[in-house]
Image (cartoon, rainbow, N blue to C red; front, side, top):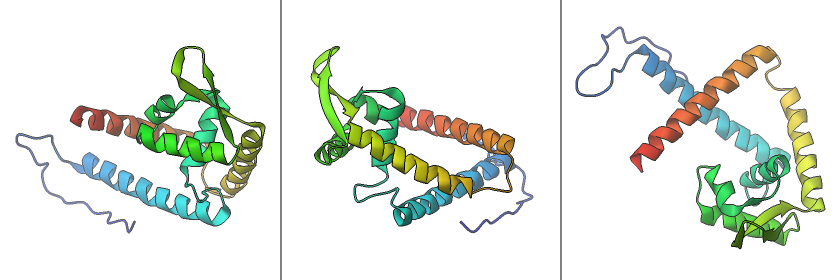
Length: 169
């Protein structure tokens, strides 16, 4: 995103709504830069095969299963800003590829658990290794501490946006 880094010099806007000041402008700029970064990451993922014909959600879906173990489709959908129906389609597509399988859920008779297959675990590990190679050549001028702090900031902003979105629902 072309950064329009400027200071308005105007007094903060007040009235019935929240105060809009330079901090709000800085957060807006950060959010727009994160969005731009996302689109660049997606384009890179498409060029390198990390994002496949079924989209970038497949890697994240498999990552959740690799890190957390078997989950229900509703649990996976709850972790993402997407519908249960979209996650069900993705689960079905991954199952058709032999990357996940549906297993009985001891806590719920009708809601099956989704589990990585051996093939799915191997594919996830391959994609994750590719991702780590790409990441190892990205942000080389940044310190690990700066990256960690930035991750925490983006995570907090993400949580705040999610909370605001839920209040509007």
